Length: 105
Image 1 (tube, rainbow, N blue to C red):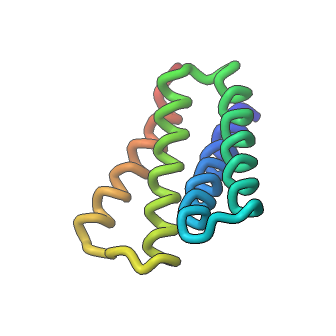
Image 2: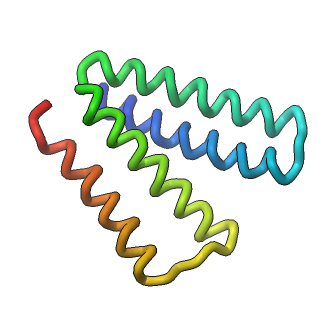
């Protein structure tokens, strides 16, 4: 359950970051609300996960999911670059994040 909570925290982080982007384009109560809810849920799930997963591992996985998820939203929905070097480094973040699951904490 701890790893599921950590993954959910990462997805909520991505939702919060996406809401920031929407809020910057159009300042509305709904966009602000979505941003706050995304980050509140993210920190709540992260806090729960850190009860059993070490802080360093949990934070690295959480930020990895947030980084990759935000980059992919930029690529798929905002027309950001798909240069092979960018995709290479995104895949390296994914491999590193998955690798942390297999290291004893």
